[in-house]
Length: 178
Image (cartoon, rainbow, N blue to C red):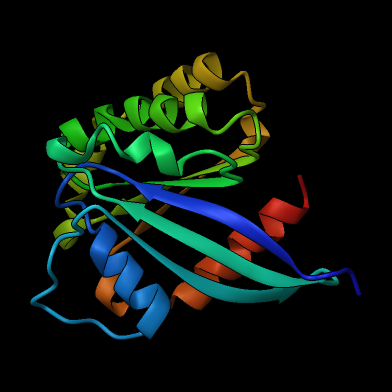
């Protein structure tokens, strides 16, 4: 067994895409309909054990509100894993490279894995057909210089019903297979 380690995870995305719901489900395994938006930054953790590794994810949720854009970069240093959440609004999808660049520039080359997590609000499949993931992947590669194997995309129908244990098992396996 290896010594325990901490993997720093930053979760970003536009206002209203479901970051607070994601945080709530990941940390409490519950869903509350009257979730308040993040103010400033929220930090929490989640333990893992896989591939002979044990440790914790240190999850950082900076607010996407414009008034916090000057303090967000302070929390990006040393980021190992980036989760960008978007939804069925095209502008949230188009802003993925902006979020990647914001985090990547401050992570000091510690970033190893980028997860694009789609919160399918109502499962509007029609809206997603116009989303060109290859173009987004190409933009991310240009920004980071990272190999395509360092990206992972997953769509989830309803965050409130999803078992995030499966999600974290998958990303832990991907992280350690890098």
